[in-house]
Image 1 (tube, helix red, strand yellow):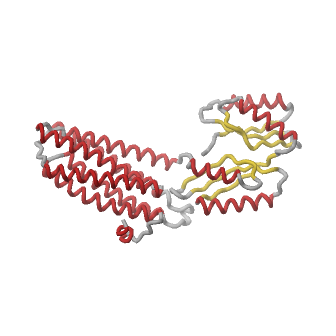
Image 2 (cartoon, helix red, strand yellow; image 1 turned 45 degrees about the vertical axis):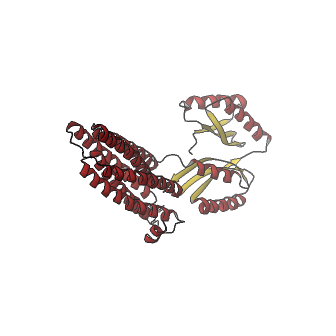
Length: 378
């Protein structure tokens, strides 16, 4: 691997270096295996072996796409894309998933044709040895690529690794069919080709599904959100935090917002200093540009404590209500402000709103209620 890092002039400690070197290794290995398998398959008139060779050639192409996508994603932000080009990697994964799926369809079509119009096989022990060696190499290459993909947080690299690992399983099926033919003269080669196609299609569809989910915008990374919540809630002067939103602009680039609860007696200057230090730390440590919103909270007055206790009891009595925050009582306006957090299974928000309004009217007659009902964003 050191030679690969030197050839591609990459630092093995950087994310881009890991992706580039692993992709380079995949290109070289897959091209060699593809050449050997296609030659062996043509000599044996085996659609299964030729199909595997074609699939390996596609694997080399996907490694090229991963390498190019990573280079493009590393471009600096500009006026057109102020958050950078990190999402190019998701487009790369999308193209890779489409290529894998198309390859699966082609292999399936050829296998069905072979079932309808069978040809005599010419399997040899040499071709079986080639497939066996390729299977071992592809298994270890696939597992290594998956490992590096997870380490570098690269969905594209993981997809390439999954395809490589599956290739080794496919090769085992091909070897079994070849062995059956040599021992009994019965050819199940075309049917193995169908199994190969099914595995290829399964991988392609899985990668496509995950990639589309990333592009559409699935909830922010749970581990990152939990860590940020822990950090923010533990900051000096912050009584609580909620409503975090995280937007992904690449595997290691995020922007987000969160509302923090601050004692209503604190002045703006104190609050700003603390939040600004926290904002800079989060940006440098977690590559996340975080914007803070502020809730004023009356946490020490008798009225405030009593309201928090009563609302807490209301929440405990409702399984679909996960919690509350941003509770504030405006004495001048005689208004109660509060946010209720509900789970995604609660469909009738109107009924909950009516119930809470009636609850508040019974506890604090004449008080105007400003209720916000929301789900957790991350």
